[in-house]
Amino acid sequence: MASDIDLDDLAAELGDFAAPDKKTGRSAREERIIAGFEDIQRFVEQHGRAPRHGEDRDIFERIYAVRLDRLRQQQECRELLTPLDRQGLLNACEANEPEGVYALTDDALLAELADTEAESSIQTLRHVRSSVEKREAEEVAQHERCQDFERFEPLFEQVQRELKAGVRVTRPFIRDASVEQGNFFILGGQTVYVADVGDAIKAPNGENDARLRVIYANGTESNLLRRSLQRALYKDDAGRRITDPDAGPLFSDVREDDDIESGTIYVLRSLSSHPYVAEYRELIHKIGVTGGKVEARIANAVHDATYLLADVEVVATYRLSRINRMRLENLFHRIFERAQLDLVIHDRFGHPVRPREWFVVPLQAIDEAVQRIRDGTITDFYYDPKEARFVGHAR
Image (tube, rainbow, N blue to C red; front, side, top):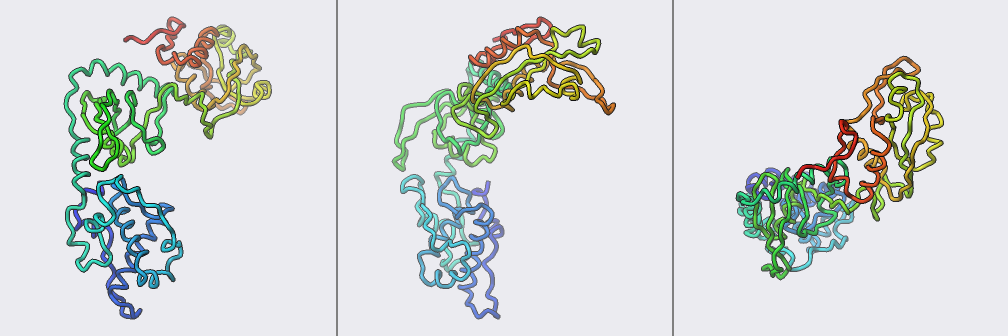
């Protein structure tokens, strides 16, 4: 991680402050100030915001935040840099993190990280990470074998099934930083489960914290502070929260891009004269979701390979609200994937087409799937095409 880097390497990453250009008439100190300010400007162009303080931030961002504070405070620097300040950074009033949230103050960060006025070069600094950061990194890394992992293994297996079915989804941790008992996360590429949350304690900075029992999918566990887990998830670019089944990736109070206010699950039966379809017509169904009228959706079926180039009849519909169309269709297809129709037809141009949304399932099985999606029990069952019914998962 960037915060583990030696300051010699850090200096190379940041670039030496520019040597004075004799043609400009500026002093070496002025050139260093300008070069440092240009680093901040490049950060703003890349991230769309000014750098901020905080131990959860990248080490480079923390350096830039300290540097910008000092430049804003000194009139000499403001006068020198104002003509170059195309982004209005010197006059902006960026809110710093509240006092006491982090172990290091801005002045302490300045002493440890960088000071554009310092007589010594940035290359002479050492020990970038604070003791708090080091302790947290060690704490997160310390895992031991979970002696009762057999209690938790079925939970991890169920979560994987629910993710595959679309009942659960993963979301960036930054949206919701809460950590509660029963939560699942992805950290360091593996699933973690918060099995227990201890009594509230006061951290050295005065904030509330708690000791957690965290179980990992690889059969290990760790006993770490809530804030340590939160910071580890923040720092992990791939860190994710796994939503609860009742958080409603399909039926939610929070509108998302693919949601429709109301819609219809429709089940179609083909009127195709294809020998296989004709023989098993009562079992072959297409399942779809639309936000409009089903009749309009199927009006041109006879010319569309998706509908087997034949007219269709609507055999069932289910009205629902706050549907995420993509996830719901994907969920149905996963539920019945082992019963997918394996048929190749040729479109009107003679090209072979293998329709993907038709399934060899009885209508009552589709009706049961809809009801189990509605009541949340779908994750406890899977569809067995040999028995043509839903079967409970072995526990």
